[in-house]
Structures are given as C-alpha cells and as structure tokens.
Amino acid sequence: MPHPSPNKLLDLLRGRGARLAGPYRYLLEEFSLLEEHRKSADAHFRSEEEAIDKLYEAELAKLTPEQRQQFDMEHLADA
Image 1 (spheres, helix red, strand yellow):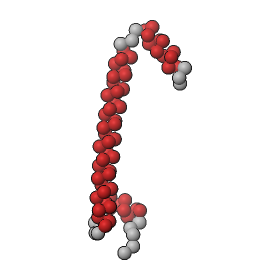
Image 2: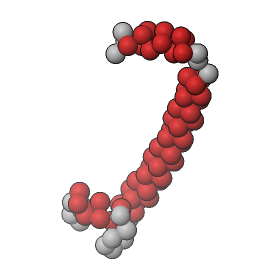
Image 3: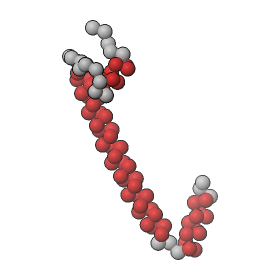
Image 4: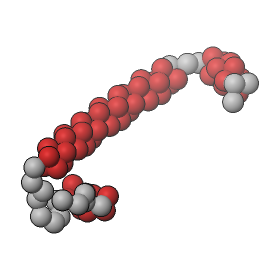
C-alpha cells in the first residue's frame, strides 16, 4: 500500500478526502490531538501575555512623571 503524499495527509487532517484505515487512522488521530493541544496552549499563552501586558501598563500608570522619566531613561539604554 503506497504512503499518502504530504499534501494528501494535510487534506485529510483538514477534514477533506476519504478516511484512512489501519495505522494511518491512528496517525491522523494523534495529529488531531496534537493540533487541539497546540491551539489550547496558544490560547493560554496569549491570554497570559494579555494579562501581563495589562498589569505592566497599570504599574506604569502609577509612576510619577519623574519616576517615568527615570524608567524610560534606564530602558532606553537597554534598547
């Protein structure tokens, strides 16, 4: 039995084409689970990043103009 081409495998993963039988079925199921995990991890990291960005902006808003100028000068040297 010939191996499916990479494009055929991608088509099947996207829900197009006929289902594969035998060991390829398990391969597709594993790819499907990995894709779901990737999406979940991506959503989690994006939400964490947004929360950290909001916290960062809130902390910056609390600085006095003098503190903000000092902060900017310290981080300007790092850029």
